[in-house]
Length: 139
Image 1 (cartoon, rainbow, N blue to C red):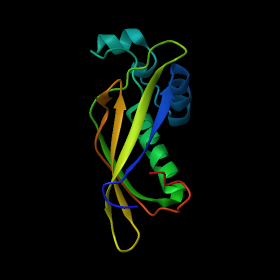
Image 2 (spheres, helix red, strand yellow):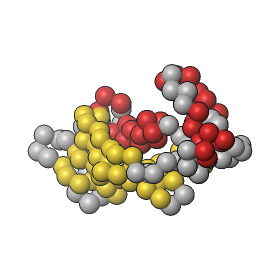
Image 3 (spheres, rainbow, N blue to C red):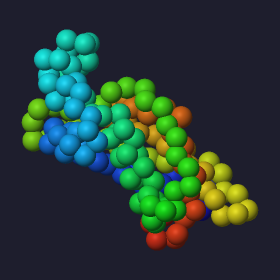
Image 4 (cartoon, helix red, strand yellow):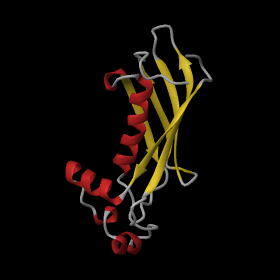
């Protein structure tokens, strides 16, 4: 693992059913996550994924690269664009990729992440620090 290494991208499919499950688990029943009419009325392109759900997908990729959830030492991101989720069986895809930014002497690895949907970045300043277990790292 060296600075500049690119990690294998991870792709996650997001459907309306996923949004329903996330709403139930999180308690976030904001209608922009299930009602086309409300979402469009407030200027969105349609129903959108929960921002925290989108961020969780990025963390899921990080845990896969790190080899274990407890190997994630730090994570941060900002939301830049919504993730529109069409009302069909296919939904949409969020792709998460990473570049190793730094490896320190203590074995910590800093990753700079890119999360996109339909070719547009949906997270900005997405970074993670991991202590790789060696199980999941795929360059």
